[in-house]
Amino acid sequence: MWSLRRSLSFRGTRVAGESGIQRQAPTKPSGFRLSLRSAGMTMRVSIIIGLASLTAGCFMPLYGDPAVVPSAGLDNRLASVEVAPIPTANAPNGSPLARVGVDIRNELMYELTGGGPAAAPTHRLEIRLTSTRLQVIVDINTARPDIEDYGINATYTLTDLATGKKVVNATTFSRVSYNIPGQEQRFAGARGLRDAENRAAKVIVDNIKSRLASYFVAGS
Image 1 (tube, rainbow, N blue to C red):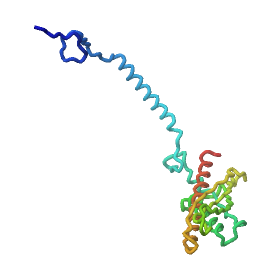
Image 2: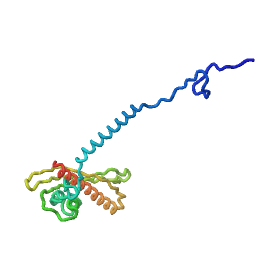
Image 3: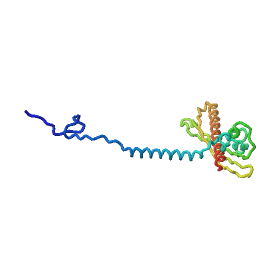
């Protein structure tokens, strides 16, 4: 009677006593290696915390309350800036640019003082404006503009009243676009232009205020 004997065996076979099976005890990670890895991780965390604590004192709130943060007080310095009337030599009274200049000055005065009374002036801010209008998209059938781009260019200087020195001399600009619904809707087109002027003026105010805040904090 013939008998069939298995001459080969493979790993993973359920028969543990079968020839060719090599059983190995599961390896356990060395406690020494784990301790080194934990120590390295702890050291990295400690370094990160140490660097964060060193740089924590380098940050200061820009518009902080001096009663809470003694090194702040930016609001008081901004409130001491006198905004000179914007000249209208290149924009006669009643023109759109003259109105924009009045809006920019009023908005700047409010932003610098927060609506409160102005402090004794220590600096004087002078601004000059020019405006641009550019046709962006033109209807090829009627040759009329569908979208225009309105821009304001501002040149401004900040003068220290105590020394008479111009401490800031810079320029900024803003560009906004608006739709022209059609020649038959002239009021809508005029309203779109007025809205574009207001939005562009707001950008100029924000840019100038940020530049002044940077000067009073960094000194340059």
